[in-house]
Image (cartoon, rainbow, N blue to C red; front, side, top):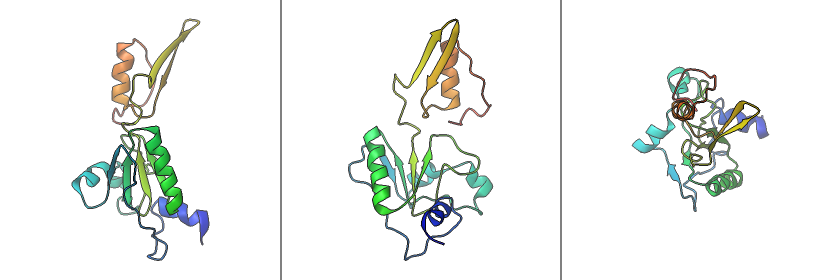
Length: 165
């Protein structure tokens, strides 16, 4: 079976790519953020997923490249590179994702947005008609968000794992 289904199955570690179909992935020129290739302790520290303790044998959660973009332009470069190489991208926003869907296997790329959108305009409170509305980016951990919400005297119901983003 070829095409998109094989690509998706490879992306979620359900199908191992063959040598004939495995594109070579290297660091991406022009990225201002950080990139990690397999074989370094930095790579091992950044590829960690909660799912590695649950699905470590069932799923290969070892991307060929981890990109931690600094800017939106870095994201665009990563997407263009992946399209050119014919590889999939798994998006990670921080903490973890229980099933491992925020990671992938080689030859695919993990795009880690944990630090990308943490500027002063990436969280806001809007008040209207006696109600408060909160907007936040994907890069803040729940612990960081709670600290900010408490400081701003707002409450947002949510789960309990403060490392989740």
